[in-house]
Image (cartoon, rainbow, N blue to C red; front, side):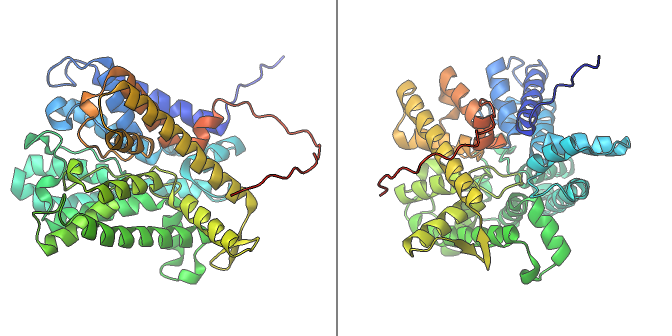
Length: 445
């Protein structure tokens, strides 16, 4: 009698894989030679490992002053694994060993890589790693133009590679703590090379693997792009340009008060891009205006695009919800975009994702406000940064207690695997009985 092979659902397999990577990373970071004081406790290591694997960037220890070169390399490896997705790496190893993908493998990879269909998933996976490494190498070369003169050849190249990978994977970890701990890229607020290179890496990494493939196939022929690609590019462009203008206006007398107009233009562009899951900052987050703080929270929740290195509820989710609201306001029944109709299942899923993120965020904010002597804006900023895997902070992460840190760890984990996937892990899938129940009427609005 053959034993039945236990197979987890794709969602549970992905979640389990990330959990194992996080746990192994935490164990490595607890080694005496991983931290500079030689005594990193397990919770600090677990928090750092989760933040790196979930490409977030929130830290309880400054990456440069708190971890040795070994610890920093462990963090960098976790960032790369988290950005690519561990399933991508495992599949490439399988390809190298001559293994072919079965139907179950394709379903898991489709969910992991953000592909719309099972067809072409093998080819997509083969292109992800070379494409990633090319952009990370290009970013490192550009950053080296500034970092090598500043730090010398060895440290300059190391810093260039580290920050390029961290930016492309939307992780936000930095090594600039040798100047001032937790300072991120504030020393380069006026530097166009560093700012524009980091911005480009964040945007490209946050567009998604499916968008890369579509653009590579069809070049600049907009009419040939899939609906998904069009919606991602359009929404991303609107968010970047809109945020650029709003931050320029909001922060002139706040976080960017001491900057000239050209410098404020550069800082506003960076601030428009980085909240959507990147985690770097060139201005002091604690000095943001009330308007700038709220806008940053909104951008953090929106995040990047599906199937990318970014987190958040995703650009396409927001676009679908806005289009649905406009359609309802016009009294129409079908939601259309770029001459395509969006199906009802997609609309229902978008609403579910928004509600799940809001419920988790509000619950966490209430809990942390009850546990910590901090203000509501500080708790909201920290929670949104964690659940959207952003990594920006108002400087309170290291001062939070054990319970609050565990809440943030769970939020980062849920944000990386996806809010909807996280909820489905704890629910048993049952087949609905083929019964049509009578419609009930309720009032809405």
